[in-house]
Image (cartoon, rainbow, N blue to C red; front, side, top):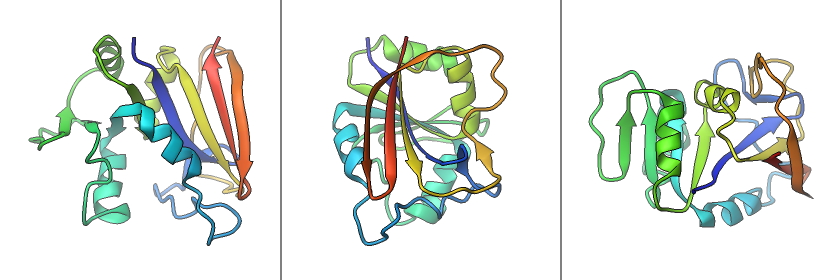
Amino acid sequence: MRNVTLFIAMSLDGYIAKKDGSVDWLQGQETEQDDMVSYQEFIQDVDTVIMGWNTYHQIITELSPERWLYEHLESYIFTHRKLIGKENIHFIQGDICESILHMKRQEGKDIWICGGADIIQPLIEQNIIDTYHISVIPIILGSGIPLFQGRKTILKLKLAASKSYNGITDLIYKRR
């Protein structure tokens, strides 16, 4: 069965984006250093990326309007919009949890949950995420879109690894 990993950056106070969805704060303490070390290691074991419409729209309009960043991955965008996909970009309408459980049973490498909050929350609530790879960025935003919101039950995790670079701390937890 494939592993489902939430790989995401978070501010020290628990936010994944500013209130307006902006992620212009995603960098370590030294701007000239390469902060992509853990991503480059992580992405080698992934062949599928999952995201919601807002994350997809932000990527294609702000972060990389010239080319699709994840052209080497099968990309599934969950949206209420009826859109036609292209090559390896699939627009999905339907239950995120059922879809991910179905994908887990298929052959392939790991599945990356990229964001955003509306995609992440039901997967956390249904305990579908196997690995939580959270890069804590050295910034306190004070407000924004929280990573963890309104859980109804406790979710126990086990620390699998941690490492720090350029002020960023990667915390990797597994389900218990």
